[in-house]
Each structure stands twice: as C-alpha cells, then as structure tokens.
Length: 437
Image 1 (tube, rainbow, N blue to C red):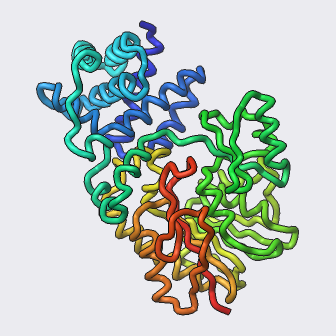
Image 2: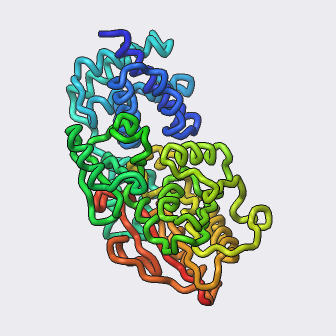
Image 3: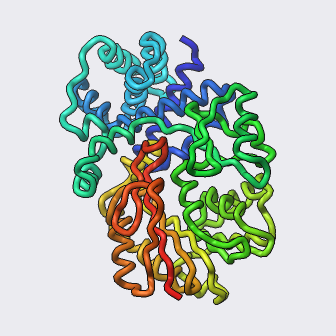
C-alpha cells in the first residue's frame, strides 16, 4: 500500500477533526489543505472523503458506537475521524475494500497512533463483512441532528424526508455566464467543443448546469472572466430585483460577491452599485473577482461596514433598489456545506432572526419611495423567511409585498420558498418588497 495513499487518509482525518472537534468550517479547512496536494486526483479524493464523512457522520458514529468496545478517548479523536473517513470510503464512495481498508489503517501511523493500526483495520474489515446496525430512526438514517429535524418537521411536515434526503445528495455544478463578455449559448458551445455537457435552463437566464463537478479555473474562459461559479437559486435572487440601468443599487451583506457581480452586469454607464459587507477580507476577494470579470469600475463601490449602522456608511442619498441576502442558518445549502448540520445550534436561530429584523429595518430607511428591496436567504426555516417578512410588513405599513413568478418556488407567505434539489438548485427563500411612493 502506497505511503501517499495512507498520508491522504491521514489528511482527511485531520481535516475532519478540525471541523468536528475544533468547530472550523470545512470550506476553510479545505482551502488550506488542498493547495498542498500536488495531484488533482488526490485533491478530489480528499474532498470527497470529507464531504461523505460529514454527510453521514451521525450514522457512522452509531455504527462505531455499536462495534467499539468503548468510545475512543478524547485524545484519540483523530483516530475516530479516521474511522469515519474509512466508513465513508466503503459506504458512499464505494472504493475498493482492499485499498480503502489497508490505506486507512496505515494512516494511523501518520497520525502517530501506531498502536491503533490494528483497531482501525479490524473495524473497517468488519464493515466490509458484517451487516451494519440498522439506523434508529430518521435522524440516524439521514444523519441530521434532532433539533433540526424537529424544526423542519414543524415547518414542512409533508416534505421532511424529502428535504433530509436531498441534503445528503451531491449538488450539481452551476455557472453564471458573464453576458457582458459572451452570450450563454456561445459559451455553451465553447464547452461542447471541450466535450463538456451543460444544460441551459429557462431560468436563471445566464445559468448553465453541469452535472459533473469541475475545477472552475480549468474551464474555458475562466481567466478571461466569461464565467463565475454560482448556484442557480442564488442567481435567481439577482434576477428578482427590478431596477433601471441608471439606478442607484445597494448590495447589502455582499460577500462572497456572486450577486455583486451579477448586479454589476445589469448596470448602465450612469448606474451605481454599492456593495457593503462587515468583513473587509471578504471584500478583497469580491474586488479580485470583479477585476477578473471586467466589472471593476468607479460605478461599483465596495465598503467594509455594518449594514445595520447606517449612520456610519450611508451618505443620505436613497437607493432605488436593495438586495439583502441576509445572514441565515444556511439550512438550504447543507448539500454543499454538510458541516452546517454539526455547527449550527438551536439557539443560533433566535440570534439570526433578530439580526435579520435589524437589517430589514435599517436598510428600509435608505430605500427611495417607490423602490424595491429583495429579501433573500438560503434557509428553509419559516422563522427566518415568511415569518420574518410577515412581521416586517406588520411593522411597516408602507411596505408592500410584490408577488414573484412561480419559478422562484412555492408560495410561502408573502414570498417564495425553494427546496434543495428542486431543478438542481439549492434551498432558497425570496420576498420582493416595494416601498409605497
């Protein structure tokens, strides 16, 4: 068994330990580890192991609890994560049993756990030989925390299992074509010449869906700024906000910047786009992306600020249109970020709901009469979505809900709710509000 294969499994275990033990985000951990791995196939395997282990973590934990004589001590949590990685290879990834077991057992040496090589080998061999324990209920079967299942059960009782199962399916790969540089059809033909199949849906209008995950920087036109990576549901948010080409537009809570770029493509030479975010580091990434796409200009202004503290950043000139993609529980994008299941806590929801309300109230004061504000989240929870908007409408009699077309999702109070996996998109909520003249 190659030492490289064992080393890669050890990296997977350490990555999982950082996420599950230290509370770090998978995205941040992989951003550090993947660039250190020279082979693209190894990078893909590391990513796949981590995603699979986190998707099915609760089920795998239950299997280990049944088969281990006693739980591993806290100091050996990396070995526990190595076992999760081993089960993920045998289960979701379907790797060769011989290669997966041997390399994962040997990885214990790389973790300075020589005495546990035999334990890892024995548990994983048993996983290839014996029937796995039956999961105890929906929570174990779909690997969701009970509090989240209960919240989804209360909000969407007839869709609970559908949502839980969709959260564990890999998401397709979505692109948004920069129509300032190339038409969607021209770019799709460019992909076809590279033997890459892409589906062009009716909505979003600049979107392409690839069912095979790709490294975006190897796709044609990436360096030339012809495409961005952005899920279809997020692209719909950028399309839902109406404004003229010469409008003054605000993108609040702008990071990671996909919608900033999307809005910028809709501006004319006399329009203005102000993008604010509380995190200055993330704004620098938005700037880099705008430069790549050829959208950086004096008309697009980036500002690090707390959107709720309008006195610190607003010049008093009202905006014609505002996009508020609000901080939320992200329960609609678990299939892309499976660690959300294990990081989010019930008490987080109340704090997020309070923050969303403050953002709505603060930003509404900066909107011109007759202007529009689009409230969007990547959440599935009604408290953050339709209940949040309904409460705002009660507080603000001059606010009017504008009905969005059916392709934005299912009617949900004054907005539209999209569930994960529908049309291949993430879970999202949208509500379009107009301020009475």
